[in-house]
Image (cartoon, rainbow, N blue to C red; front, side):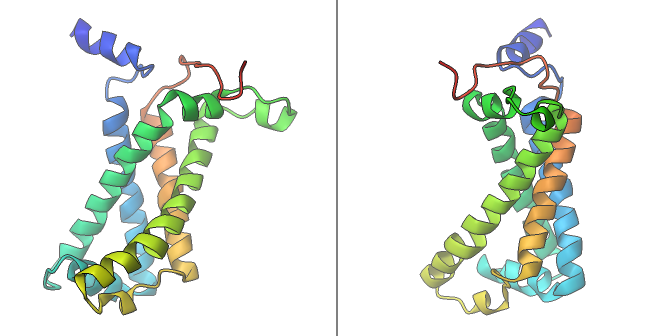
Length: 183
């Protein structure tokens, strides 16, 4: 037991759940929120398009399962990135502006989640997905509203919910690495 807490302290995370659990939980809840938004705008993306890019038949909740699994993986990636010294240093540094210096670490993590959601939208559906669909030779891409406002809103919702859940489940306040711009 003391080994676990020593390991957690070495990584600067005092939560017993750790960043992988916080990231996975935040990713699953964020993906569910994004999925509900998709379900309202275009349910065929969840029921047919997502399973088809993996070669699955659109049966039952396969699309939902894949979508939530994507969220879990991306949540773990977010947890890993936001707990590394470079990004954590940027999130925790004390800026010279009054407005930013008065924000809590939790609010900054939520903002990092928002930016992560924006980056995911810019990279995955706009760049990776078209290349993937061309590689596997499927016509499922026509059902994906990659550049649509709904896709952007969904990814921003995903990132924000991910940031909220991660900020609630992980305590990063005791960790203060050097900022990325320190001398």
